[in-house]
Image (cartoon, rainbow, N blue to C red; front, top):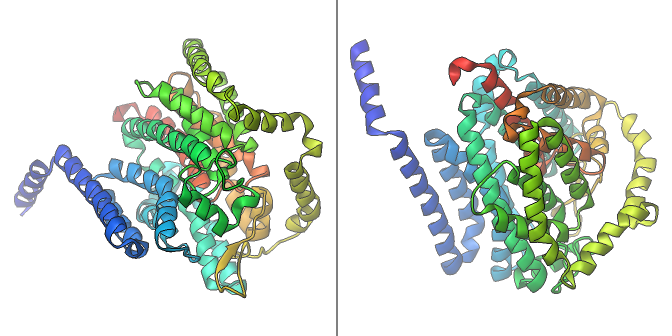
Length: 475
């Protein structure tokens, strides 16, 4: 029986080689793209159900058969779903339920399998930070179910949990760190190029579907006016904040990548990054640059300086063109006069008003407290809290915030001690992205949704790289 089992497994491995599985994966991805395109031009409204369902089916196949392609598919679903949703809305009418936006959560949530599969050995493997964060999030879910309505609770739960389990999935595959590193670099180079190019197009042209979304969502108070040269760029994402976070990570990763796409990606990437006018992300990018320079060897520092000079030559002429120059310059000037800036004053007032209230919240309000049901429309709407710190204590209270923040601090302390970044520029960039994202929690809820995937995910990749280098027998 044993020999038959060994023979059967051998036959399976020979029948489905890694190349075969990769081909199967690409067939599934291309089939998903073809089906989405066909539905858009023939039965657009059906995409509101077909898109999330087929994305989940494709993701399950990739997760089981080709984990590397699953990672790329997940990121691109996160990057592109908001744009696809806007295109569908423009064609068949506004959907206040925003049900297509569930697709990224469905795709990411598959990694809950990894979490529970590796949970018994997670403590031995260094996964304590993820377990602590999971405990904090689970507590927030329980409290939310007691105090708040189910739909807002589930929506918030997905926002909080998805980054943690996805990051744990990346960490648990530390043995394949080199291939995951290469794949992430490739993903984010193309991300910067495609999202950056569309961002510039969005600013100059103001496509009809973006103007329609801006008006229907009533985001024109914070995302600009629905006219050419009047929008704050958000590209394929759903608002300037998440776009700024994604581009911050992508532009920092460009310093660790090579290839002919780097400089055109830098040109459109930096231009759209400036046009999104998200000062928090600008400051995060600068902090990330400082961290990378402090972590790598002098030889790599010289290479980075050369890259920065060439990128500056590519970007500066574009920035000086009117009306781009006026928009960017006026936003940069606010750094020198923050005490008169409306956004800064609003955030300061929010802290003065809410900090003591948040810190006195022992039990927490649970998930769903930052979402409310509109009594007139019956739809759930977000209540913006411009602070990750306040959000944590309002939502989780001290009981849930202690394990959640404890897990995050454990990661930060561990990652800050790593020395492998001196010869692995990706690891230093991943550490810088994760830590600079954490620094932004003071004025931005960057631990949620795609921003949280950036923060938790790159800290997890730094941990995976460290673990890989500590086990020379694996290499």
